[in-house]
Length: 130
Image 1 (cartoon, rainbow, N blue to C red):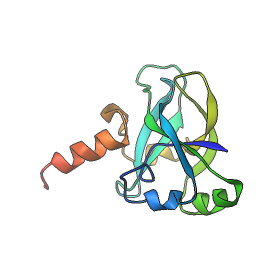
Image 2 (cartoon, one colour):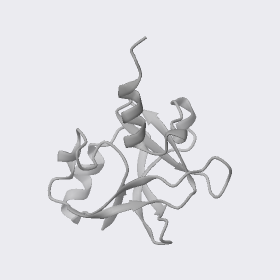
Image 3 (cartoon, rainbow, N blue to C red):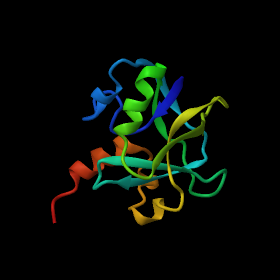
């Protein structure tokens, strides 16, 4: 199964080891139909589908081939409020990906305007501690 990931399990990120036994396919972008939130104290992104509305972005991420025997272990490593759902890519392809429960996302800080998880983390590191 091909799955789109856009957060802490991507290459170079702290939880990439959770994808052991999968195959990296390529970098990818979603269609311009999503918003992002920071879950778990800046540990995970939560992506929700909002459609083609003002403020939606194309979320950068990575595509992986996930063998059926690895899927449950990966899902078990995800935080509450995330689930495997349909994600539309910029190419028009539809794949599976980690989405946030839309009713829970507003409970967390919105980070859409940063343009993606890695951009958010880069800017977060540059912000002086208060």
